Image (cartoon, rainbow, N blue to C red; front, top):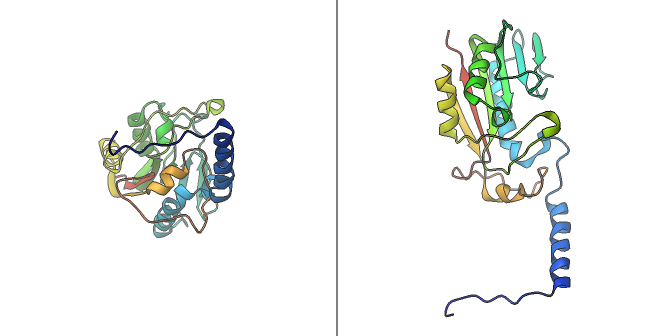
Length: 217
């Protein structure tokens, strides 16, 4: 057929060898991260959240983090780590106290009812307090059934803003980051960041989406 590009089919042995070579290359160029904080996809996200928390200041403030403890080392007056799903973010709060800062990273995509979850983030946040939410967008389905963590949702920047606003939060800033190289890099693993990984942002290909909001007084 005119204009068609014909590819010669490789012998089975050559195909297997090519596959092994690609896997070996990827292990070098895309090494598996040992923690979420090392992941390429989270470098700009982590920097944005760190700048925001620095600006808010920790001294004299109380904080709750759902799920994880990435920000436990800050000089909070009081800090609690609430692990979802043991702490069910969609269930009634039943008189639980409030915090000056509520941090919820990489969780909203795993809850059954994101509307109820965000309403509870507001419920956990003191009047005039702050809420930090981050969630992935262009990444593969990732489930942790051993921990009761299933994968349900994805939110664009506009969608995350709407979700928070419908819960009555005032959205101060929405951000996102991603590029096609990172999208491809996450196909088979969660690679650690290396200096050869591009950090340019392609706004139409967000890998991570985040929002900084406040609870009106």
